Length: 287
Image (cartoon, rainbow, N blue to C red):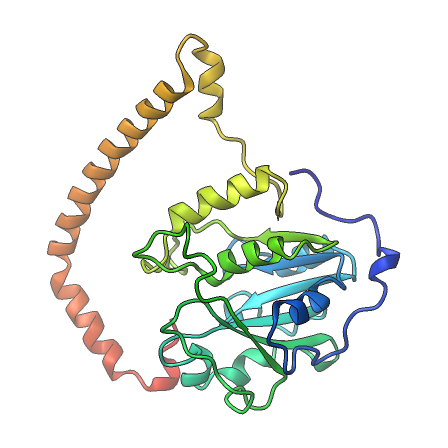
């Protein structure tokens, strides 16, 4: 996608909204006025691939950095740039609310550049919270129920970052929408929650980036499979796609068989782990 860093502050983005500007916002048009004031809207995934200082240094002071839920996963000190926190609703309300972690999260955002909280709802079963629930931190609400319903896999839920990327793109902002750390890669530290369709989202976002609708910080990796069409010019692209799908299907089937064996072998270990987790004080149950 090329360089997503601006050479310097843009004059049309010279005036940013004041701290706490999210208070009371509810409509897409209200939110658009906030985001349109910035040269870049950088969505920061909770990922081990994110290097906050390097990321912030890549953008001008006219950039807005959007964080999600438990920001202590990527921040270890107060963030000095313009920031906004997206807090996803759940059937019990936002997890940082019912876990009593609001203070632990917002302490990373100094008040002078913190626009506030966006309490986001994507599924009908998800519950929005009040400003009081967020300990009177400036809070606005965005209801996107049904927003991804016409194309997202029916048995899964969109991630907050995925929904935000598409929604921001639809707003037609004058600045750039940038994704940082959206790799969906498992690690010893980071879980990939099964309620989301990570494969679908990665395919969608890469295609979206190729269309120029969004920008991926660091660029999109070259697809080595695209080179197969050049190596085998006499074979239709559809046949190459079928061959790739066949190999992937076989490998996935083999992997699932091995996973089933591991699940059987680790039943006792998982039972013991669940038991010890149940004994932990509530304040230590961060996941």
